[in-house]
Length: 396
Image (cartoon, rainbow, N blue to C red; front, side):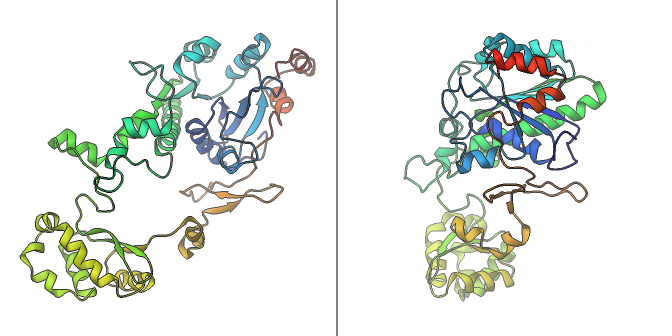
């Protein structure tokens, strides 16, 4: 292995990372965290026009997105730099980019060009709205995709007006779907021997994430509206006040509904025809929520969480982020992980799934700009005098 990789799982694959901002780096982070040799390619410092990839290099976003990678600088607008990149692509397994659709063709790093050099190459692209179509040339941004993709119309309290999700959901899911597509293409390559192009976009990811709300429209013509904290189909499910804050209660099925009523000391709710069925509870949701809230206000959140879960009623606290990482179950799962070799010490969120034989780890902090340029180029067969010539030409 050319360096200390994060896992043996994907260590046989070499990935050239041309991505920037968030969606692309999210995709490539998945590969790096599972051991792929990810080589992040950035513009040389003398040509850089400011940070392009996840904010300032010393900021939390950049560190979170670019751990477990190596870094080289290449000026793709310089003939020597472009030639060097193509030489690397001829030996790589994967190239990932999230330029606007016209940019890669203009640079000469598009899929048809690189496929001619390396038919086994898996070439992955993330765009804002798709590689073709009436919006293909528009600049992509997470919140634009959240709005166009329907999420903001169903997020927030009824009548509140559109509300964005508290995380860049379109960016993150587009990155995850891109990584999934890359892995599917690599698996298929084992059969066909050929690479292929993987394409996704913020808009595609966001519409897919509408999931059952999309299905309700496509199958039954139902257009979902804002429901706030109330679950659209499982009732009563939502946020309820306590003596010292709020909790989530989820009631799925009649048996759980009966257990909830008994535990909150409200047997009369079971006897009311207004709440006898799921449809009745849906029609009378506002009055039902008020009746439940009158009971939950009498005890603390911790008391209700313990009591309701013991009775088989799903219930949980609503935590601020600092309390999330102090939670005993989150601590037990080891989601906050120290990055090996980082100075000063750095802790980030690790992968949300585990493998028994080839686990992931945070093996290296984010690299400095061009930190591994000479070592990586040498691994790709560049002689010392060729590397020196690239440096003299300002291409690295």
